[in-house]
Each structure stands twice: as C-alpha cells, then as structure tokens.
Amino acid sequence: MRENKSAVMRRSFGAAAVVAALTLAACGGSDSTNSGGTATEGSAKLKNMTKATLILDFLPNAVHAGIYRAAAAGYYADNNIDLKIIQPTSTADTLKLIEAGKADFGIADGIDVATQIDQGRGAKAIMAVVQRPLGGLISLKSEGLTDAAAFNGKTVGLTGVPSDTAILDTILENGGESTDSVKKVTIGFNGVQNLESKKINGFVGFYPADGVQVEEDGFPINVLEFDENGGPKYPGLVVFSTEKRIKEDPALMNAFVDATVQGYDDTIKDPAQSLNDLLAANKAMKRDITKAQLDAYLPLFSAGAKNYGVIDEANIEALSTFLVDKKLIKAPIAPSRFDTNEFVPTGN
Image (cartoon, one colour):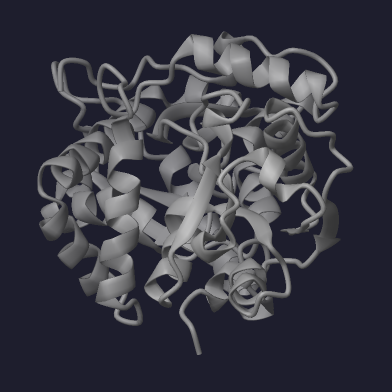
C-alpha cells in the first residue's frame, strides 16, 4: 500500500481520531488559559511551565519537520511550554477546535484561515510555515503537458474542494485557455493513484507532497505551480490562533512562535537532523519518501522572506483580491486582520 494513501485522508481521519483530538485539545486549551501567561523579562520564556496544544493540518509529514525539531531540541520546554502535538480529524475540525478555545494553536492553509475570517470567525495567523502556496497542476512528464494549452481536451482530477477549481481555472486562464477547455472530474484525494493508472491526465494537488510521491513511485512529473501561473504568492500554511486568544495571552504566543522559528531555522540549516527528529517521533513514516518531500519543502520555508515565519502584507493583499475575484470570500480582508507578525523574531 503506497504511503500516499494518507493524502486521501487529508480532510477526514476517522472517528477514533475525533475522540482523541477533542480529549487532548481540551486538556491543552484549558490548562494554558490558567497558566499565568507572562514571560520572563527580556526573553520568550514563560514564568511557569504551561500546557499547550498544537493541532496539525494533516498527518505528521515533512512540512512539520521544524516543529518536531523544536520539540526534540527542547526549544518548547526551554520556553516553559509543555506542548502536545496532535493530528486533526479534518481540516474543518482543526479550525473549529481553535475557534471553540479547545486548543491553542493550529496549522491551516492560508485560504482556510481567510475563509474563516470571511465567515466572521476569530481565526488569525501568527506566523507562516511556508511562504508559497503548495497547490499546482501535476501531470506525468511522459504526457508532455508543459503548459496550459497542452491540457486542452484533457481530463483533470479535482478533490471537490472549491479552491481546487479556482486554482485550475487560474492556471488555464493565465495560459490563454478557457476554463471549460478541460474535462473536470471529481476524484477526491485519489489524484496520485488516478494519475499513475492514467485514468486522468493531470490533477490539482500539493506538489511537494503528492508530486514527490508520484516521482518516488517511479513516474517523473511536470508541475504548473499555482503562484507561477497566474495565482498569488501567499503563505500556503500558517500557524493560527484566534484574536481573543492572542489578546488574552500574548506571552504564550510569543513563546510558541520563538521556539517554532528556532526549529525551522535549524531545519533550513541542517535538514538531516530535523528529518531524524521527525522520524524518531513518527515511527510509521518511511525515510526515503519523507526525505524527498522535505527536500521539496526546504525552498518553500523561506522563499525569499526576510526571516523565517514572517508574513508579507503584500502577499495577503494579493490573496484577498484573488479570493474575492473567485467568489471564495465576500469582502477583502486587511492584512492586519489576517495576521500579526509581532511574535516573529527578527534578524535570524
């Protein structure tokens, strides 16, 4: 069974995980609220050991290497954070648990956070995990589909998530093609399997994860990256909390971001050590595919940002404009509402 079967579960992980997530998240959220929450003068270290919960966006994988590095190196403990890392039951559940105050931190796609804000919810980003969107149009190199025009008349697989259609349509329009020039089929999260079996000519997926999986399976690929084919550049994954939580406990936010940035700075400098830390904490993961995916993520962690974790206001404005144009949100979102950079260390 190919390891990419986990991609099928990107937004649904099963009933047992639901119970685990709710139980663990409730513990982290309630304990940290009563922790005192002030930092020692001149540092990010909290005065008291504080329990906190981070809900990932997906099953642990290469993009989370910096988090597991920070945990293994003791950066969270050094800042007096007793961090519990849990996998989500679904993307929607991550967002709901944070909104309900049952967990302190979550990881989500920038579009998911923007959608929550548009719906009047309290989500707010506190740092970027990656600086570029992860979506792209993936095809087999043997098909020779190197530009949008080449997809005319071809079959493209979509998960059924609205943003997939927006990504595909943008890539097509940027290449001078109409949005109905391809046959769109909904395939859920079976893009890798359907592409390899040639049931489809391409699919919208995460190229550092799904694309790498296809190549590791022995099928060289072509990728039309979203932000290089008409889409905005924006942080594909962010750590977020809520406006209320950020206001109530800025010291906890600062301590968490400080430790996490250290972990990703280490990962950028020494990916082999972070790979070892990630694998040590997640025994079921396979080294070869995880290393290949981490290699693909490495240039996306900073991608020209002045320092790791910072969120560029211009990129958020571009994302907001795109989402309004594609009718994925109703009104523009100001960068100051989407995120805050006040906790991201400078000069790393």
